[in-house]
Length: 375
Image (cartoon, rainbow, N blue to C red; front, side, top):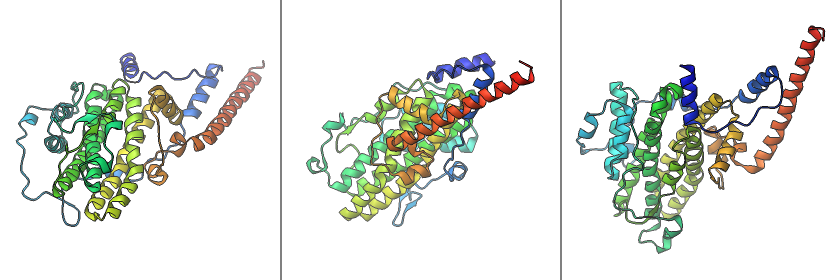
């Protein structure tokens, strides 16, 4: 059984650790324990978020989020034949209509929570189903605000809606794709990312509602496929998936959120700014979940999280761009030295000093053992 688990671990985490220092076995064990047991502070609200009741506030009312009045029910026939979380996730991924995808996402998470269904296992589609609009183009082909047919507030909401729609699929793909490895990752991993998918579906619904109030709809301007392309890169590596999506892509949302809120206020659209501010606040949980599970996976690999994060970004050619919202990132538990080069240099010096200390400790320990043996 242990051998099987090890093979599974290697199949989902193909990132090879750096060779250990050329020390004897006793010293290697001491070095390993010291290097990988560094305390990491997680988001203080993580426990409360995990145990919060189901959130049915799918409508943005006059003063904030509320349950939608006169909500039209979707016949969840596609979910009736599903008996696990992973199966329902596959249904969401293969649903093309954006609003239906968002509603099914919430219904799937609700059904799983209320009925106590297992995680199960399922095969994800190669790529999620998408509507005919928006047209997907390269980022360089996205028209600037002045050249688009949308006013600035609708333009920004459309871009955010596209991010949130992709985020629904990114979270469900993580649940479904890695569902065969529940024994290694644990049920909490899948529970967290299904919860993230539910949050993102609510966010998309708010953006879509506000666009409709402004006389527009999702699909009225082109969008890019960068988010899903980054997701596809990490389809065979759970450590890379966590690094690239929550810790890079979603962390960018923490950086952009306050700027977007200020632009909407400057445009005179307080209602949209309130929606974006609420979404931005809730995204802290999603980055925090990514940090929590990335650290957990690194511990299983016997790797130091900070250096592993940098190695993965280099291998997958992922660039981390500023300006950074250091306050929000720190709140989510994302250490500055992981992504900020100016902080990273100082951290590297500290790590080198720590390695020297560990080796000296090993040498002293060996000398003491040899002395006790009369050598």
